[in-house]
Image 1 (cartoon, helix red, strand yellow):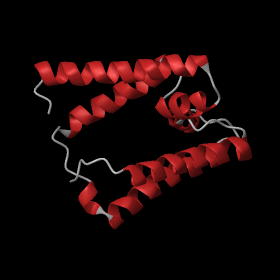
Image 2 (cartoon, rainbow, N blue to C red):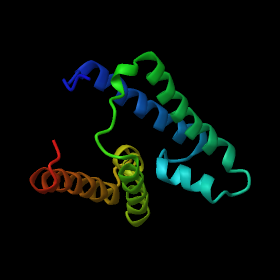
Image 3 (tube, helix red, strand yellow):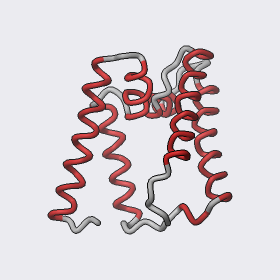
Length: 142
């Protein structure tokens, strides 16, 4: 698995994320915050589930397509499945506490000039940096 920075693919990915978020906003008036979209499936509101399911299904299908196209990009995890599951639940809890996720705040909120989203995104980044630093110092993370 390559860890080299590839600016063209990063730019293409960023443009696709921005395009998808813009299309959802323009076509549906909704913010592309994944945690909120999934939350609306878990606690459904009548007439509001179809677009949410299509959005999440598109994410899953895109990931599966990438896996079939370039399986070498998916490296095995160095962590057990139970650790990954707990980490996922903690991220989900954090998005509820923070009032949104990185896609909702970092992509859509910053694009709208939201100060709240700026603070949230800076907090996400700082917490991630702190977690990696502590993990490397005390937990043996690479």
